Image 1: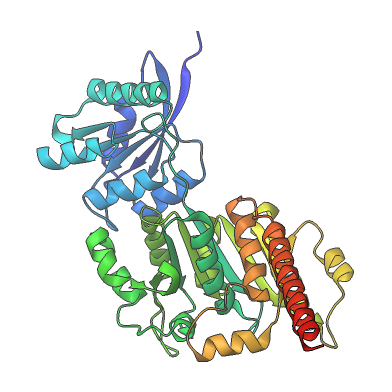
Image 2 (image 1 turned 180 degrees about the vertical axis):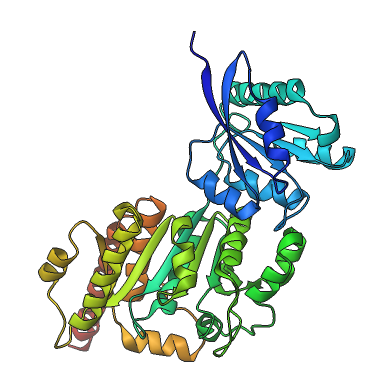
Length: 413
């Protein structure tokens, strides 16, 4: 009888502990374990995202995270994979809290041995399988949507702000708008926000980032958006890209939807590409801009981003020098494309008043359609009945007015 082949992700910063775990999991009669080791939370989350993991062994105290934060970050990204916790201390209150939050077991390193570890892993996988995942229900997916301008001045930040608001309205779920264009600080300008607390504050508190800390850092924006404002670096050095990747892995726990204003292609946006659920490239319909868009699409293919994750939003100006729709379809075959009207007067007025474009404006309507497609939600049917009723009502009022006028004229005669 063939043994089950089980892959165990060990997230542990002590290299001396790895061969010990491997020896404990060898010679198991029920299964053959393969131990995959990472030594930080970030690398553990990245490996977990690659799939093929049957169970997770997690040391709570890591170089880039500690305590309950380590568990919550992994749990938010585990997708039902059972998690067995390892700790150097016997903290009963913490162990009870984390088991109630979804951990399968809590093992103290000094009291652990091969028998205890194998039993915890096998029982954890059995319980998880019997429940069909977390409590019998699939974990609510969290979505990370990147908005990337193929060149400057194409309206990337305007689209990111509007798309976040429309995803919030379409899904009725908590939506975070995060400004990662760290040199421009455009989101704060467009929405009239103060920039009092920024993404740098979130990074500084990363190891202690619970809900209370998070609520103190973010800003409430228009239309119930949660906004993480950019630091105005003005040419200064930005944070390490891997720290930003780690931050947004954490934030999946709090936000079903996150929209990232990535600005232009750079080391930060490149580092975040593997984490994205969708990437929206923003271009105008001018030939030079579309040329840059095609180069960016080719780069996305080189880094093996699936075409299903990629969308092209083209600001359709209709001016001289714009490329025809049929030519764009041929240039970007296989890439979903959304046309957005430039509507410059409406957008300029909104910018001057630090607000989003009106919900009935052509631009906002087009972005709403894009949000529905990203969320997998059917677009509402046009309100034809309401429009017809309005026309009939108007016709009735017109008819009554004419009848009244005829009556007046008749009495006059």
